[in-house]
Image 1 (cartoon, rainbow, N blue to C red):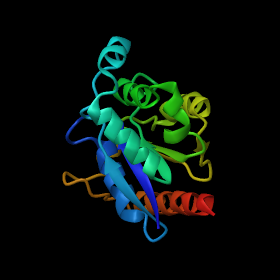
Image 2: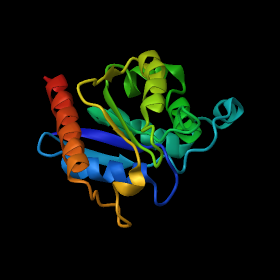
Image 3: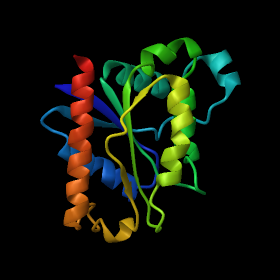
Image 4: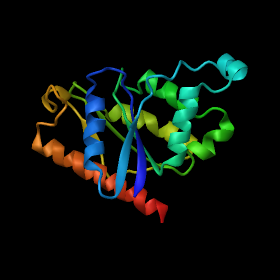
Length: 186
């Protein structure tokens, strides 16, 4: 069974993207397991820290976890029509030093999903990730698209999806990406 590391690009406790990541993890079987990882402990990128102290332990641990996986799932909010800073910061740290990029990212299957309380879904944020994915040499999965608008109407207070059509889209996305990752291993 393939392992996919899932990252949520929001630090908010009751994040719709955190809820979406939980739903995707629950829906991924049988082809793969989505293991949820956190970017919460990753400090702001600072080249002086990298040079003087090396890669911080939370960054190194996440790099090792991604490198040991077969796929990466980015569940991204959309802030000001683009990538959330905390998530981009995490990926910037994960790409340091540049010699680690092949081990952590190159050739790794990746999918992008997202949810927002607004009407525009996360289409612009997801599109903004594409140059980063290309630069790092990942293999994006384009077969499914999961950008959820009006997320406050999609999830209940406990994080459960209350819309049957969205629940089915989440299941199809999770299982489709899981198959892509499993097939990439062959």
